[in-house]
Length: 153
Image (cartoon, rainbow, N blue to C red; front, side, top):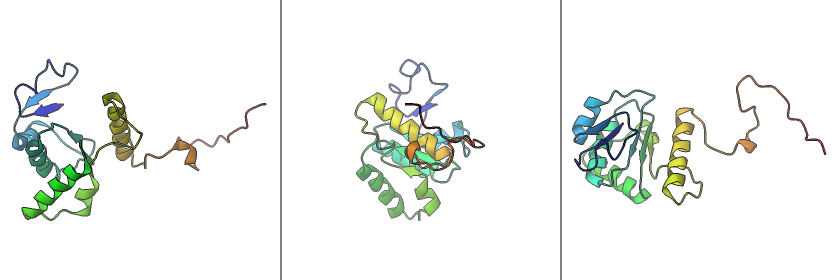
């Protein structure tokens, strides 16, 4: 689902593969989208005030992941504004905020950045750290006890 408050951005033409394109103010977005512990959000409208208003609403939802595209300074400014308005953020709320969003993969172009964000979301919803599999001691898949064989020379 794509949500934006700008008529020239929230269009099916711009997002032909989206299940739904929602033209709405931040206060109305959550009225149109069912959220639960499997719902994730990525704030990337490039409109600071829109993202800030939506972030305020998302903090009290069951979503496990709120990604914020952009520099860490932007995320910190948003959190400072929310707290300056009198909202005390809990550790649970802070833990669901990922800004800057994505894993550190050296991503430079939009495809690489999207991949790093998707990888981080996948790790979060599966309660995994998003680290290298080669450093994992236990089997990758549950119930697998097959020992690793040394390749033939």
